[in-house]
Image (cartoon, rainbow, N blue to C red; front, side):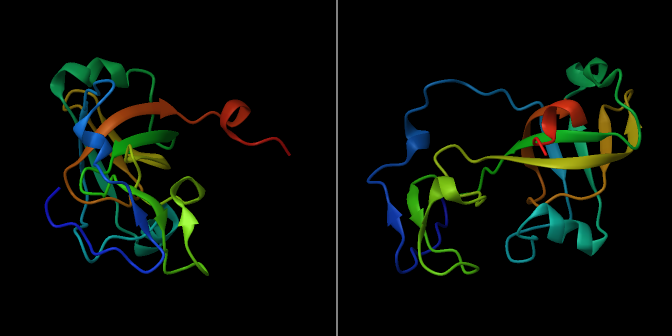
Amino acid sequence: MGDRPEIRAGEVALGHDPGDTPDAGITFIGRIRSPWSRGDCPKNIGRARETGQGARIELAPEYAQALTGLSVGQPILLQYWMDRARRDLVMQAPRHAEGPRGTFALRSPNRPNPVSVSTVVITALDPEAATIDIDAIDCFDHTPVVDIKPWLETVDAPPA
């Protein structure tokens, strides 16, 4: 898995990498172009918005028609694969919390399947070039895109 960060006190790793035995295949539909790399990436989408730095989604050309119906100003659910995250941690020791927590109790990218999701806003759209500019993102440059869905208030907002 490349340069894997050290385990912090209280963290527990599996004895294997779940990515070594996949159950299903995922097709990456494009890449995110962001200004971020290891060491300077915001920890979440809220912090990413505070920087004022936007990002771009570059889809594979064959997905250009799939942008039909999207528009500038529209929020979308962007699902992306944190390809440089650890996949073997079941307990993590986040710096922002008192004591270790289970992976499923955190929004950390370190998880068995490092799928992240953020609600982002379309700031520019070029269907011919298969690109979407977005208001912000909290991932490294060239992060693979898994899927894009429209954010719908009647479906995606939790009940009052």
